Image 1 (cartoon, helix red, strand yellow):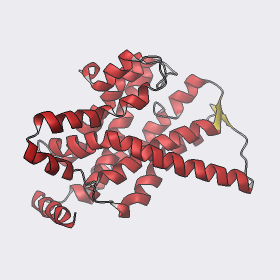
Image 2: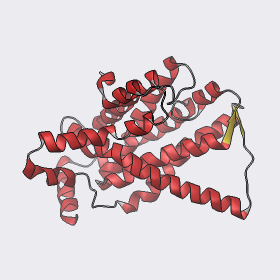
Image 3: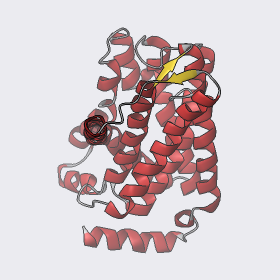
Length: 272
């Protein structure tokens, strides 16, 4: 079923192009635009897009949404250093070097947030609330994360420019389960804020940490590094799984009675 997703069509059409992953990020919002203009009555379109919280910043959760994913994803590269899978590159600690690094970090975070807004409008903005209508919010968090993970399979299995190192038999399932558990964190941020912005920031922070982590080390073996860190890394999965399991067990927002949730959603709608 995953091969029929838009991401699979992009991966199959451009298996060797570096832009493949970038194009696939726009598949969810493209599907949402199609739903809006073909399947949604004209009088409901504004209300549909109002559900995504684009007019709510959710800024109280911005630090949390940025720091936690970067620590989890970045920490996996620390594990790679400890396990002697990679060596640390020389670091420029001069004032100019730190300034350039900081500017690059801020710019990359901003770019990644906008890029993954295109994904999160589809995953957590549109799909998650609809699955929540069918089952509990914990199960909906896992289900949305799993679908999101399956969305990546065509890229992993057919493209040569996305998670290309390591055995497909290991890389593909690890990526799916990691994104599934990461979806728990994204769902938590969504249910706390009902705004897609902090969710997009969290998603962007993960990929920023992957990019900066990969740039900070020299792999002794590209395959071994892929098995430890990055999206396909077991250290990444372990960290994300622990945090995801914690939220599934302890998140107060998912212990709230349904009636209270409906009241809270109406208050957010009025505030918007």
